[in-house]
Amino acid sequence: MRDNVFVAICYALTLGSLLSYATVLLRRARRAGRVAKSEELPWT
Amino acid sequence: MSTTVPNPQSIPGTNASAVSRRWRGITSTGFSRVLGVATLVLVVWLVLFGLLFSPPDQTQQSSVRIMYIHVPTAWVAYLAFGVTGLSSAMYLFRRAHSLAWDRVAGASAEIGVMFMALTLITGSLWGRLTWGVYWAWDARLTTTAFLFVTYVGYLAVRRLGGSHQARAKRSAVLGLLAVIEIPLVHFSVELWRSLHQEASVANPSGDVKMDGLMLFSLFVGLIAFSLLYFWLVLHRQRAMYLEDQYDDADLDVALVERRAETKEHSRA
Amino acid sequence: MWRTARLVAAKDLGIEWRSRQVTNQVLPFAGLTLVLFAFALDRDEITARVAPGLFWLATTFSLIVLVQRTFAVETADGALDTLRVAGVDPAGIYLGKALALAAQLVVLEALLLVGVIVFYASHIRPAGIVLVIVTAFLATSGLAFVGTLYGGLAAGAKGRETLLPLLLLPVVAPVLIGATRAFEAAFGTRGGEGIRAGVEISDGWPWVGMLAIFAAVFGAAGVLAFGPLLEEA
View 1 (cartoon, rainbow over the protein chains, first blue to last red):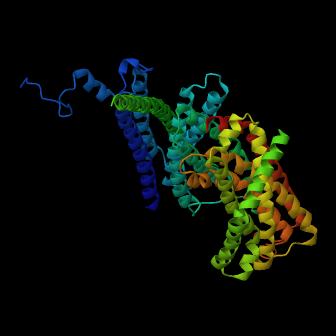
View 2: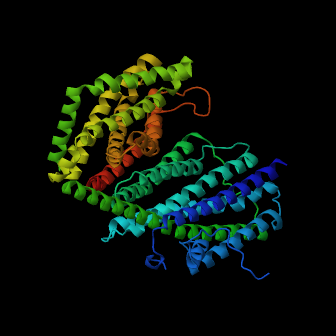
View 3: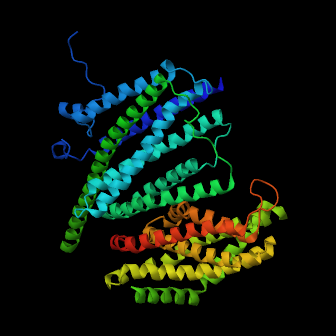
């Protein structure tokens, strides 16, 4: 029983924090990118 | 009903291309989107194989499923810190002192710290189930914890401020110092434990009998998290580029305002 | 380089001698930590047993205070910039500051050793005296090299008071481990029961080797890295 709870915590915690990190990352990029002109970005 | 429903997200004054750019994300490209989709598919696979398809272990029962998460996060964290060290060296020893290398180093360290935190948490939960304790003063565990603290310090140094080049140089030196510090810490802890304690905690994967499906699940986890790492680094260092530009733009605006002010004063 | 180092060290020690900040503030601080450890650990037999560890912990904490101090002197009125603009060899500055720091640490350690013997009833085995001196010398060099390097890294930055311990403490962990184990061998503590029964003096020498490697590696790293660090400051 405890095994399953711990396994569930591990999966939820790992995937949850990775997902929220990615979300925050994209949002921050958007905020910082307001002044950037998309034609001038080195990767476009 | 053929009337177009106004997009609830659209703000008055933004045109269609801005909306689509906002939706796609400013840091994404065709390549990163393909990478992102592949990562998502593999993460779903990881959950399916890790939780459903792979059999429970004979001795560890279902707690072995933590391995499919724990080992890949540890691998990615070490990979990330390796990339940080390498990029720091590239920044410092290349004549150009390109800020691009500095941004890769910073992005990689940040992502590595996150993966390392996850490694420590999942590892201690797994340890509680298999060894009975959350933590053991094993050489590998201790080194990992030191690695984590060291790179938390590295990230703090990156936030110290100053010019971009100053930040880059300071953190590159620190990134290389971390590379020489870690073997020393590992060596000393190893010497400490081996001198004083009988065989410490067994290699966590050593007592697991891996059957084909378990090995495959672990493999899926490693690929999935590696791809995720590349996707995150790609976006993070682009976001850093934008943040640096934003800082510079702020500085330019402030300079222009300041000059205008002094001109007014001199006229008055 | 060596001449610069000597001059910088003499300058730093001269400043310390005149301001008496080390003798009036850092030494009492180190002594106080010894007393507080005794309060926290309560039992006499425990303090006698962990005395080597407490000695090096007190030294490490004092190191942080000393490093803050040695760079506060430099950055307060832009003295470091002046030295750099004057074209003084950064490796010389680094070695000089490390030398001055090491000299202060040695004074501190000598008094702490007396404190440990008085408060914790420790005694050094006669055969362990050489081990104590060699260990203290190498550990002090290592601490001074690392402290000067990371102090220079954080110098002049905002929030360096809180940043320095975060950077420094993980790096000096090998010194803390090695020097403590070597002192345990010299003191003959941890005899009797437990998993660590019967520490021989010879058990201390591998640690001396590790301390030597540590000091050499960080000394070399500091000489190489201090120049680039000063340039940007």
